[in-house]
Length: 410
Ligand code: NIG
Ligand code: FE
Image 1 (cartoon, protein in one colour):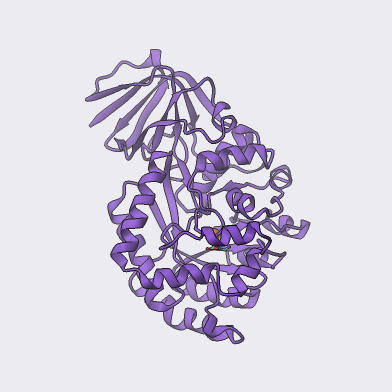
Image 2 (tube, rainbow, N blue to C red):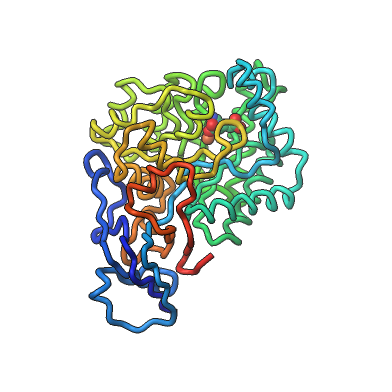
């Protein structure tokens, strides 16, 4: 099956020599072709170029006159399997309570864990499936999903089995992440080392036996898991073939970046609290610093020093953190806007941060994240728009009109 997208006003983020990530100055590079075609064969990108160079045969043609084509967003950090929304805590926060205070009194992650425990696997699957459909409609083509609202062995396995079913049934590229060390259950308060033992000795082996996780995650932060807890959990996960990808430096300069780098994390995420030592420590590593603008916006946190990181030669990725407690938005178009408006990334840098670099942060940048021959045909066609800079500029508007995943319109 060959599909031609023809008369594309501008085909954005084409790549002739695919690279796995963009760092420092490379982040401002973004090639486009004005007046282009894109040819898809058997779900993959087969060819692209200027429209006047096209002279082949196809089974289907789609006319994109006036419209632009972009590689789908890659969202490398979400918690989208959950049972309940948490708008009451949102109101508590408006009235002055902090995220940590809400967590201390048993709200926050524990609130979600309680509701998740009460829901069946099928119920969780139905809810997550609907959320994924929404995510697809607004332009995301690859997504990482974490467990972490279970906090008991059975509940964590239930969440991961839901993610496995989503992987089997969704056209999205999906990676799963085991986040048993997301919160400390009430009954372990005062002796959290026993919960860490449970994660290491019971949860990780069970998760591995069922082959349920690509990555292992820990919330390494003040009031949550310590650097020592994190090191032990990551070591155990690595033994079972799960690559680290962690929550670090959201509440405090926690040592999370350093421990993540030490264990070869594919990404360290959040990074609202970054000193020079953290930036230095990331240089020359394989670890993708990942910023979550939706969370900082929703919790009114300090902004991660994205500009400083890029200017010092680092790569930066930006993901949604879609979850009911700190970022109840699935919208990568909005993340793209925030990258420019709040973090002073140029549009080119912002596209790299939300496509190629987030693909890297979930280990799939050889398959998705740019328009390159041999990559999956995951892309969207916009409504008629004047330029690619319009994408981050017009924040809050849905600019996506048609979506193709694996070459098929969805
Ligand atoms: O990435 N920071 C830790 N975990 C999530 C929030 C989870 C929640 O509050 O439900 C995050 O922001
Ligand atoms: Fe998160």
